[in-house]
Image (cartoon, rainbow, N blue to C red; front, side, top):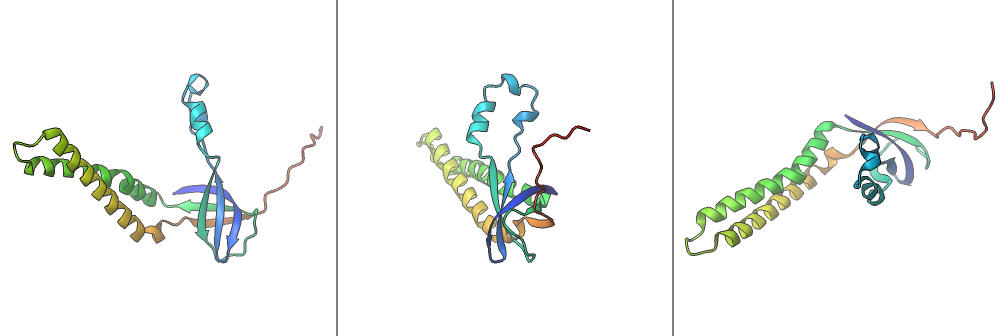
Length: 157
């Protein structure tokens, strides 16, 4: 299970918007101090992700909540987003090549078949994602309340 802690930023009836701080993997890399990609990635990646989920509990704006998304949902979404269009591309390519008359250009036929197959794979993935959208909603597993205010004073012991 993938768990994240976020803050409630908006409340619309039983639906709430939760802002989750995005974790950068660049800070964990040993080469991040000499990498040319890290500054670009950090500049183009938003700091927060906003997730909408349903709740029956009373929450207030600013409350912390723990969200959970089952790992199977993440894997299925990745499969739909990447694997279906890619498989459609190759299936379309092979079908176009197998029915191509000998007088047609091989490259253009393969390109057209691949693009059509990839588009059909993407449309199929989009359709199946809409069918399973309700099962992919993050679930609130804990209500953590308001964050504790920390003092900026340093006390000497």
